Image (tube, rainbow, N blue to C red; front, side):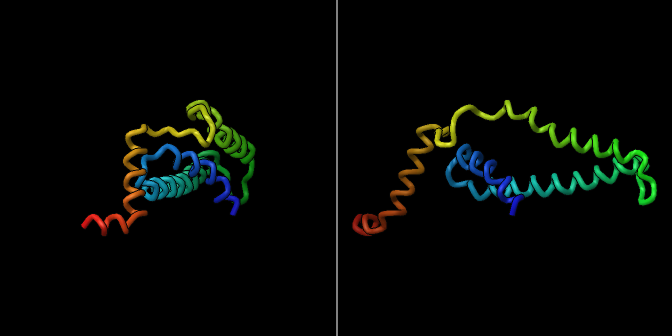
Length: 118
């Protein structure tokens, strides 16, 4: 539950920035990136423990592994400056794309007019 809540802000930002019609593809890309990150962190965590010689009975360098973990968890803060300025209601798409999307939605919403034109 908490994992989905933390992804909510990223999904809202991504849905505002992606062109209409590929929201599902973008969601799949975000989820696959998350899964790849979880797998990579598991593997690299095991490698780190192996390099530091932390085992089931030897905890001498465990403090160093915890320190590396905490630094790595704070490292995404450096990337926050790359986010675009503005609030969540700001439209970031060009007017041409938005106009095409609205025309497509109107044709889907008005099937009676489509039948009358035939």
